[in-house]
Length: 355
Image (cartoon, rainbow, N blue to C red; front, side, top):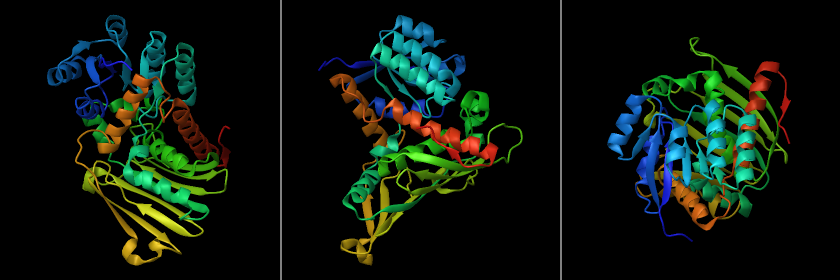
């Protein structure tokens, strides 16, 4: 295993997350962020002022001049596949911000380039690394819930103006983003429920709602997703939470089975979390044991401790040359489900998810 720090480059700064990732990356001695590329000069100047590194007006110039081990890509979703494929051809490993692309075909292009050039390709579905989510998975495997029959996921994360204020207005244009909240946020919950259930979705019913006519994405979306073993997931994904809502996000997950249930209202970057666990038998049948508390270390940066642990996993995989626990296939499956939801919203019919 090499002891030299991994050389990282950031592609795209017109996004809400690059600065959040820097809070994590600066704490990792195994990595060194050496360059950033962004065509909007004002964004680039501010970024390299705050985080001293080389700056480039174009990512092609950056990957030609810099000897990079890993590229973190935060471009508009429609532009990610081209940049990722070019990096892969130069042997640069890839972390592509979810949902990775505007279409599943774009992810498949990245996967083909990564496989052909033997580079790592991963997406930051960081919720899998949250201690509460990991405990939920343990309880499901232990059979606390019995057969899982019903799931709920709600993610309402801020109004549209946060993208305009964050220099990411492209997120509100379907041709660049691929879609609205279901495309950008729904993939998080879709991936998490796939991981928790260890099962795949087979069909969906979707509906969307527009509130702001000046943008061509939906503001709100709902979906009913059926998994192969029968569990039904109800998704409520939206950009319509009030500005005054705590932390700017209304988040909720629940799973109900034939013997018990779990529910959690995450605060994302919070340090105090509570998981409700109820079961017909055993310790969780008693009310005094049903509120399970988690005290997490304070951690700045995207996703808090979960985001940091995800990045540590990526670094370990690069150093050890092993496959990451979250692969491009996971990104592909999540986006295929989103595309089926959008198709159902148009057709007004139940639509299958590609096998």
